[in-house]
Length: 111
Length: 114
Image (tube, rainbow over all chains, first blue to last red):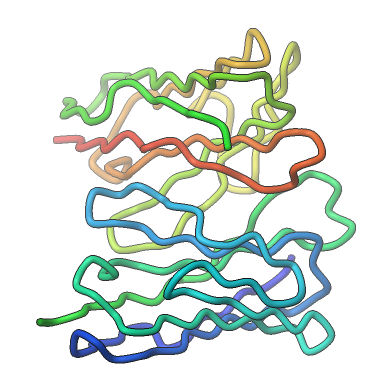
């Protein structure tokens, strides 16, 4: 099946700093989503972005489907940004809408 | 987006017992899924809950251990049977609606098995 690799695995930032999280995938995709898992375990949808660029406030994402990677940018980080960020993909041709998750990037934003 | 609720939100159970987790969606959806997240790990798909037919299980998961029901388009249950401490995880349901192709997750059920 499709492989998803995220980097870095851990990231510690000072409040106000910017960061870039990366997601590499091994095959063509129908769907790519970024999630933020908060400390209570809730998965929050950030972006649905199988290709192109999107922005939502301090967050933006870019997926270059031909090169099989996606980037999540966090600007002016805040302590509430802490948590685990997951990239998940649905492989093209799967026909079943199943998502394969990366191992996540654990972000800690310190005051 | 769909509004998804799960019950219970958390539970502590004794080994050898079973727990049934409910997932309710506020609108009809095409696909419903169950995932497991073991402590400190990523999410792993357990099965796809099919309306009116048997669930489709992923490799490593079997119906006897994780029976699933989906009696209609807005509701599904997952049972964790004959539990052991290794079943301690967060269990999450997710949904995917026709023409949206974006999955949304319920708040999860945090299970601890003693």
